[in-house]
Image (cartoon, rainbow, N blue to C red):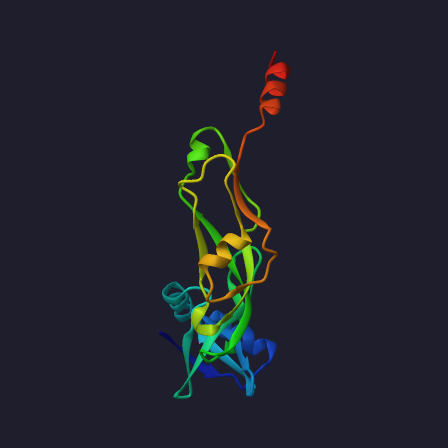
Length: 194
């Protein structure tokens, strides 16, 4: 488990926030059940390192004034143009805490169907899940290499494989499919060119 060192923030003024950000720190809060919300600051470089190590949904050991708490990165705000993180929310958890969150769906490989002239369509890029803190996946990968034209993966297909957390979608929702490229579109394009 990666450790992130934090300092408690007493000065909550706007001028203090600007100074903190200019010094490479990010304002943040820690909250949770039966926990008083605390305003803290963390180093930007430390946060980036920890996210690379544990991922977006990983458990982080937050060291605050010599006390360690297990937290997850619950939310963050960033600048639209630069992507610089402006503020972070940490949720204090234990291994039994159930969390509602979103995880990315990542497709791996190039399908057999695409190589035969089909097209891969991804309908869901994120899934809403409920999981205990220690079962949170950073992402869900679907290997599409062997998918032929006509192959579809639905939520129910993933529920069998990922039984250690709940996927909060209808079983019949399609996540990805390999489809035919419409011949009609190709014919129309040829007619226009002629």
